Length: 138
Image (cartoon, rainbow, N blue to C red; front, side, top):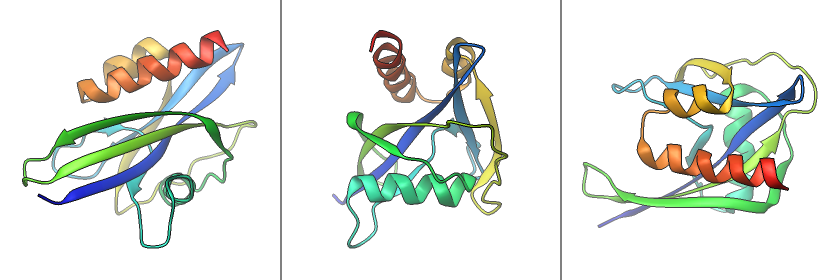
């Protein structure tokens, strides 16, 4: 069994003193909603991958918070095992998104409840729960 290691971030911003989360809709056959993330490339660590993936998928150049992260592991239909690490990254000022056309179909900023309902997979909902708890209690 091959282990696939991915990294990314839960990107958020504060609008009218409320947190909004950035979700991306994938171009893959499932059109699933998730967070900016991707496979770790040779020579990269998890933080470098998270930064690169955000930049590639959205054109945002954000600072990754390395003081907090969440992880999940799961088996893929192809028999591989995936280990995903997500950090947080805050968008400090309004910036337009430029989506990576080959991978990203759509994007949106959502409040916690709407984001949680929009996420396709339960493990991503749990990671959002953990991130939201972290951001609202720090």
